[in-house]
Amino acid sequence: MIRVSAWLTRIALLHLLLGFLAGGLLLLHKGDWLPAIPGLLIMHIEWVLMGWMGLMALAVAWWIFPRIDRHRPSAWPVWIAGGVFIAGVWTVIIGAGAGLPSALLAGRLLELGGLLGMGATLWPRIRAYRRRQR
Amino acid sequence: MPALARLFVKTALVYLGAGLLLGIYLALPARGAWLTWQHLLWPIWIHMLTLGWLSQLIFGVAFWLFPRHSREQPYGPAHLAWWTYFMLNSGLLLRWVSEPLTLYSPFSLWRYLLLLSALLQAASGILMAGYLWTRTKPR
Image 1 (cartoon, chains in turn orange, red):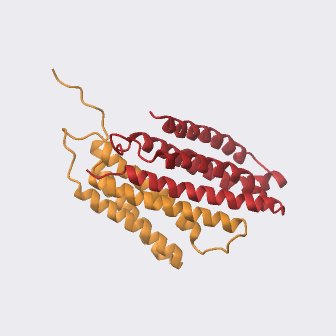
Image 2 (tube, rainbow over the protein chains, first blue to last red):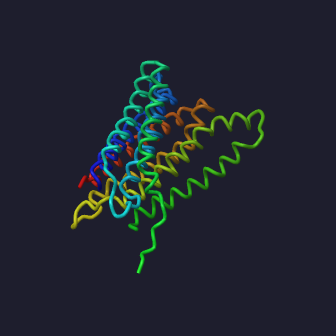
Image 3 (spheres, chains in turn green, yellow):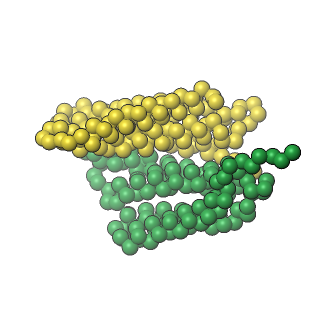
């Protein structure tokens, strides 16, 4: 597995772990086993939808999508875009925990920026296989 | 495709079908008790699609396609992934029953089943994250 994909996948797995734990806590609250934790529902949704599923899909796409002329483009834009996306997830998490709506907005903008960066590098690689010339 | 990957993917497809059926029920015009049940079943529907369908599909495909653990043991500590399958699905099935009934009825058994369901689902996340970590190797 390409190094950048492996690291983004590992961070996605960390988000999977946190997202499932947060979901368990929410369910315990629903059964009156625990008091409510402010912002936990937003954290749960963010960790699972963006941090786990979104990041995992982008990381694996960079690894397995067809190469361009047998070369995979430089990985450094993906390191940066992935970092921005992850920063966005954690800005939303912090915003949800601290009750800061402006941080939620900033986090979602960072996520969008990260996605656009990843999308720009992935877009040219979404194509049909070229038939070999004889 | 290894047996566990097939099991994850087929179960995921069953959840997608069940999620679509429940989605139809939730979209029907409703009043009174029927409407109450639609509200109670809404979180079940979301988790049918995000956990039962999407997460389980990702688990199955990752188990199948991620880099091999080693030549001798290509799927590594696969028992962790098997445990994930059973814990996730038993947790989800328990949740179908206990989550709406905990809110609908004062009978305390539902609370205990909901507790068990929460523990099973959270544990399945811990196990799968740990398992896939062993298969995520940078080159």
